Length: 384
Image (cartoon, rainbow, N blue to C red; front, side, top):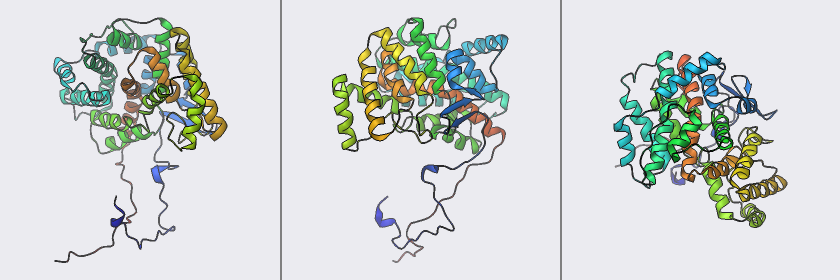
């Protein structure tokens, strides 16, 4: 905003207002979905440490946990998998809409459009009962990967590959993107990334979905709004920027000088720092482990060598630690995904957390409507 519209005589009144820019430190509401414990650098989903979930569970089990509050038994998991797989197909009209989008459009814009189309197709749009919203959430969980994969192939001038209902979500996504399922180490690394990206308390995109839900809008509109928030490079888009940065460096021998120059120039280095974590993102060790697995499997060790150098310089010089986007970026690149599709994959995972928060907000709702402190021109009259 131009400075000429700001009241030069404005004097803040500390007794009346204490502005928290970015809502930093503000506790807005309660939640039973997840907890980010900054003191112990831990993250729990419904009480379970995310590191244990990543190592011991599948993404489908974690999705069930997000929606239902506890991990499924074998029968519950089988029923959930059967339902999710039955919803994977998307309509011919939605598929054609994705096909007609400009080839140069960002994939986040494509998936935003695809989810909006799902809302247009659903005749239950104003039915927000818990049962119906849960069904809508599972439908989005199943159909979003199909739309992302379709957009990936269309942008490369390739034919759409329909979903395979005999495969897990991770396996099926590779099948739809590349026409084949890679070795189990790659599938596991991808599945782990989805679990780690599934939920993270009241982050920007999740808060956005709750704000929209608080107006009693529908779950599709809230999800579309979350996608819009996640697109930004200060949020979900950071994993893309990390890989662009690593490709700019290119050679592990150049990484130290690049980082020192970037710090000297006060350049924003993506993939480092976090509003909540001050001693390091609790998800990073697990994702870094599987990024290294990707380097071992694919022989692309240089990305992890660049990773190690950049991390060391940043920690030594600034005491700032990587966040999840830092290892996820090169891991996705080594899996064969185009950089523009890293954030849509984030959407594929985070739709579980968004839906859990949307349903939680709807269950005990009050419209979210904060106040602001006016600093503009004082009241005045039009002189003509």
